[in-house]
Amino acid sequence: MRILQPWARALCVVALAVAVLAPAWGGPDRTGAAATPRDVALKTADRLTIAATFYPAAQPGGPGVVLLPMYKSDRRAWARLIKPLRVRGVSVLAIDPRGHGLSAKQGRKDLGARVAKRDTKIFKAMHKDAVAAVRWLAKDGGCDAEKIVLVGASVGPAVAIDTASRHPKEVAAVVAMSPVAKTLGLDTLAKLKGVPAETPLLLLVHREEVELGADQIVEARPEARLVVYDEACPPEAGQARGWANGTRMFRRLPLVEQTIASFVVAATGSEAENVVLDGIVTAEGPHVDPWAEAVDVGLPGAKGSVRAFRVGRRILFGGTVPPEVGGLRFEVQTGAEAEDGSTDLALGPPQILVVDLGTGSVAWTWGGMGSVPNFPGMGGAPLFGKTVPVLRVVRSSDGTTFEGEWFIPRFGEDCDGIRLFVGFAPTPPPRPRGGMVSGSPQHAVNLPTR
Image (cartoon, rainbow, N blue to C red):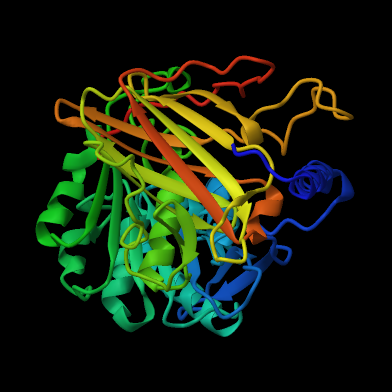
């Protein structure tokens, strides 16, 4: 980092103090704070009452998502997806469809017993629950009626596609986690014919379940986006069958929540992304693919490439490097704009992230993601607070593909520019010395295939 003038160094110290003390002061969190969630009751066309929880975005008028749970599950299974959606300005309505959760009892009728017996009539009617949720978001949830997405898990994708085929003008896109071609009386492939070709479709599935329907759906709808995860199973899953089915993907497979949330934003054209251009973050307009306008920021002359963009405090990066590259070093520096328009004033030390592509894990971190010992007046307190990056790494004989996400310091959200420096190396660069302490490399992940 360049040597700054005395006044600039003073500004850095002030910025550091603000960043460190902001959590203690209870300062505003601009990562997506929104109104308090509330439980609501939906009325279906056949006069059933569907229990749901509404999570409004910070600003009304944006996109909305309806969450459809797995067989014999309920809305609580979606807990980890709520925040990634809301920080992107998406309102969420998680429902207990008929026969599930608090929607099992309908007066004197116990639809839960019929679900347990796999009564196909229950599942064939769930499209009424989904469209009731869609219409509630448009009318009472303050969402844009043309930007409502259905996200389903297990049997949920079948219900979502059934709904989209019956109400194509009311469903902007569909996300299917572990889709099945035919299940519980629902023929997904047949219903897919009624879904407009221009309706975006995202499929996420573990490799062991691809042949249950995801491959057939993509064959019928080639424009669909398919993400297939590898066969690696974390120890806590116990090698159980279906350990990564539907919402069980959460916590067990990397970047699932971020992939879904970014797809929703891209599919609805709802958010103007900030993208990295020549190493400097600049504002650009909305686009179809969140990576479409992310510009290559790799080292000049390097065989691989890295692309990245920024949304508020989030830096998302991805790329491909040749097999001989075993380590990546990312450095993000928050800056203030100078009079000539350049971003030459660094505010605080850089954030450094080093990735070991051999193991698919974060080797070490420093700066905004670590701590500085014996900093005057701070002791060994964390600098900005620790952030554990999220990382997905895919290895093959042709090279390595990766995607990741992490946060810049709180005060950096409103700064004029962010510099992103990327370095390639045969092995991960070693930890720095001389009083610098790295963050804990605790985010080792399974290696999925995409």
